[in-house]
Image (cartoon, rainbow, N blue to C red; front, side, top):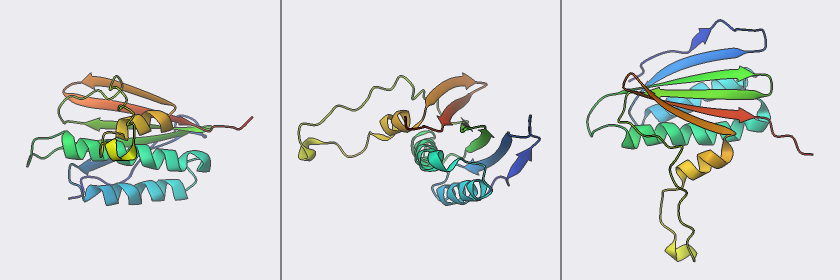
Length: 155
């Protein structure tokens, strides 16, 4: 079920571009999310250096909300906003799922061998590694997660 179409917002300045889209809490929406992000990026709104980091973090965050944020069978909405600015991108997720703050979530334990390594549990750690900043707040029964990405210049 598609909940929304790409919404273009008036740009605060000529070098800022903002778009928002709503998705339902269904696994099939991950494909729609990917297509929307591709469209946004193909218009030159995501600096190429940060695109893969944005894709990985956004996919992980939305998948976590879909898989863990709601009671089985309940319907919810996830709004994703993309705000491009000079040299970076701010991604904001707003969902009405159960409260969950990923920011203080501890990193997974390091396994002694590959055979001892658990399956799963590394998504938040990867998001923390790929994003240049994570912020969380709870407002009006909604989770708000903000991920910031900046171009990383080699020195």
